[in-house]
Length: 357
Image 1 (cartoon, helix red, strand yellow):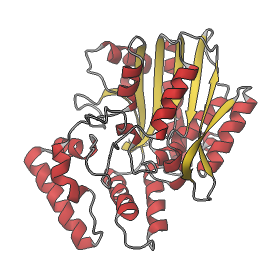
Image 2 (image 1 turned 180 degrees about the vertical axis):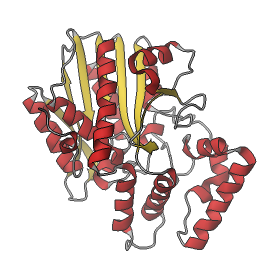
Image 3 (image 1 turned 135 degrees about the vertical axis):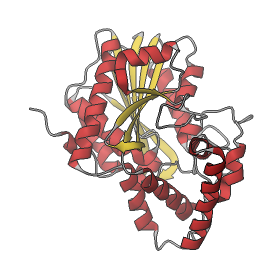
Image 4 (image 1 turned 90 degrees about the vertical axis):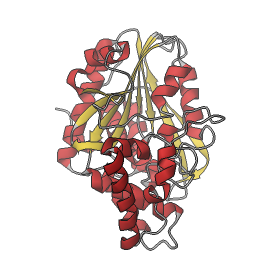
């Protein structure tokens, strides 16, 4: 009888990395470590993206699993990848599986969603010479990423956002905040001014491990949106598209498009999905983000804003520990019930992908 899924989930980045590497060794596959050139963890030690592959290098069919794109959300992805390996994950005959652990190791190690440059990695994949504009974010920038965290100042910021929602609708506000922005380095969902180190490493992994692939399924593990413990396979494709139909064949009713309002996610710019589609134009690509719910939206939103304030505007560090723990709790409910539920969603998602291969 396999261990309870809750045992697979790490206590922190360092333990998660060790468990992933150990699981790879027990599965008889090698892991490759890519050390971050500058960033360090809270313990002062180096940070790594680790990857592993099984199945023939020249495979034309493959599954790519990505954990930790949004740092602190890596508790989920790390637990899933380690758990799947320990439960006997295997590539279908002639196919390949590639696992990427902690694509944003800085955020994972520090319990932050962003990387070492305050960049939201899932907004970083754009033409930085001509980044997308988000004028609605610009209008609301000071209210979204407040500089003053006093109750009165936060209330004023909230009033600005509420007025916008009343005038334009809640969905429009959600999109203005989360779509991605490239003008405010100390703001939320900032996409950066250049390709990040993690961005470059992901492309290198694709070149090294998936050079001959013709049919690729990608699952990117995320947390924070939706009802607690619920799961959704988010695709950035219209319901009438071939991509959407392929996703539905694999994952059925879990599939939701971010492009037409049926998903918990608004439309986004600079995502991994868009990057892979551009990098692999001749590949039949089916990309989905497995998004699992954690806490009520208000809790997650408050944690994000407080984390941004603490790391960009706070005058001292007295609240640093409390805010860091709040961000971790918002994206990682450390309970057996939640872990059982979300690991089940991941098992179903991976099984559907492997069946399609």
